[in-house]
Image 1 (cartoon, each protein chain N blue to C red):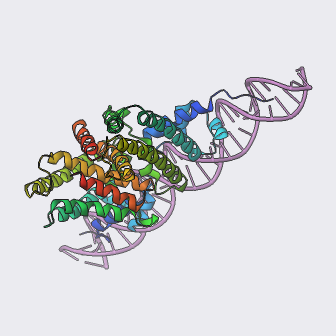
Image 2: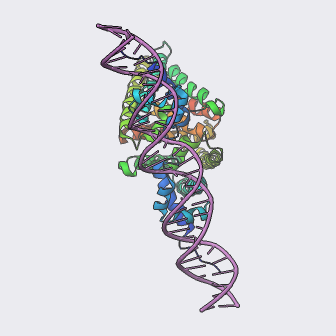
Image 3: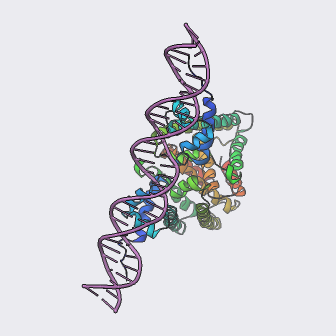
Length: 193
Length: 193
DNA sequence: TTGATTTTGTACTGAGCAATCCAAAACGCC
DNA sequence: GGCGTTTTGGATTGCTCAGTACAAAATCAA
């Protein structure tokens, strides 16, 4: 009935995600999004309501992928402490990349850039936090049943603590902290479980 | 000899700081800076080289003030653990303010917004991190001498850990985490020392 | 092939951006 | 009061921003 699209919508979201991840929301212009996706302005605005809407889609996509990876680790057969060590180890690796690739975590970046200024994004962030929190808490509770993690400690508090440690490592990495120090933070965090 | 200034330069930096702190670097326009300082464009550009230069001055000023407060706590007569508890307690208070006042910490915000994109600012952030690190490490070492903190642990690693915990609490607060959870993170962090 | 429908490229909109220009104003000094 | 110097306000620069308008192109059903 009509002219079909020349591009894949999901691919476009992926490309936009790369751009937003690299530069942040404000610093990514609609022209940057055209360049990144290879689409013209019309196609972008015909497909997505606005830059903000595209960002929301890209952020959700990022969360989906990231949480998939987290779940894969948490659902593996490792002892609970090892699972958490693996999660923190990823942060060290990611934050030690060369400058041009070191863009951190889009969720953390967005918490700081938009968390207190964009109610819609704040809602997305809040739901994502809860999801990660529940997954981590469940893994910690399992570790407590296995005797791998101290049963006297509150699993929820530990889950909040681990998530905060991850965010903190990402902030410190941006302040110039090197690999050794990050590994020290990682060890101290795991020892606290 | 010449027409004198009608304003105080340091006051202007303070006012600019408020604006940058509230909205971040990118999202603060030069017009916003005029409004915040009460100065005209000419006065701003006659006094400061650029928006970027003014931001650098404001950031340094923020660090000066913030580090003054931190030093006051660390140099007090409290036991080391209590000092750290006090530092973390401030974060909980600050992040629980009503939305319009909840702007977090300019240093953390800047780490995420500019840390990996602005070499000059990155240098300032790095030096500030080192300063905080040294102060905290010294306090922890003193605590170890007093028997307040486990001597078997590496004071440097603990210092990095505490700084990361602070950054992490600020990120989590932006993701919507409430007071109770932040207090839990605080307790877990202190228990880890 | 025609016609209905959607996508696409391009030009454009109005607004806001950081920064500059310049002439008028405001001083201290003589 | 006049002079040299600096500050100040306001207009202006050239540019980029997010988003839109519109006509040409592409498809498919008939």
